[in-house]
Length: 324
Image 1: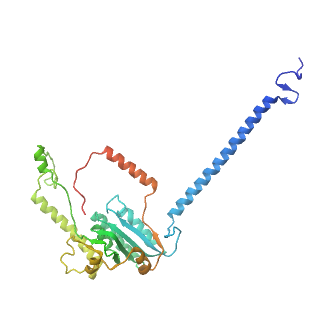
Image 2 (image 1 turned 180 degrees about the vertical axis):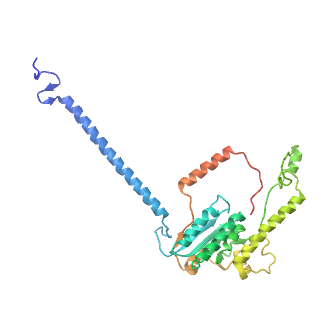
């Protein structure tokens, strides 16, 4: 049989037969399709990357109420919720925001929007001292506080460092006092026949143990500790408010809480106004830029997952309440 015999199956003098050509065409087409698909995915991921980068840049840029970068502005910082380490209203969280607001050359004034029932006197002292320090470093940048629903105890401790305080007539302000709360379970333990076996090294190491009877000596001692913290609170308010306080009122530092209208009469509040009114009419910069640190979505999710895991893994705690 001749080498070039056209009767040879699958071959002819012109190259591959029809089915081989079809296979090659299919392979070539598939390769082109894969390349186009890979190119489209590459374009998509590059576009997604730049969109993500621009979004982060946009979120990090100071913005006014309209969501766009602004120049001359009022710097807003929210003092919201419990004042405690690890919370939104902690010194570690808010002090960097205060510094950023003061150092921004476009900041005309700083507005503390307060809505908190109080919390840690230590966190309050950190924030109070930092506000006063920054005010001395930046004397041309005033600090005003506006109480919305409530600013009590440690919250008022903090805002007393501001130049002026405003509130609504129905706001709750004051509560200049200190407490340490807990529970006593000795009567219930007696009924259930439960014995408390507490071992300590140090005579007063078990002070205020909720499962032991109260010790009059220890109770009196801890009252003196609370009085010391209370006096620190009073001194801070007096330093911040000065002669505006009506010190002749015997209940001023008793721990009572008052409405904003009564707070004006007592010198705890300078006037009645909303945050917007203070920005517009007092500071003179209607553009408001929010400097309050906010958790991003990933932080919120991780914190919630961590909290859920912690609740499942850690035993229940039956200690006493926080110092407020």
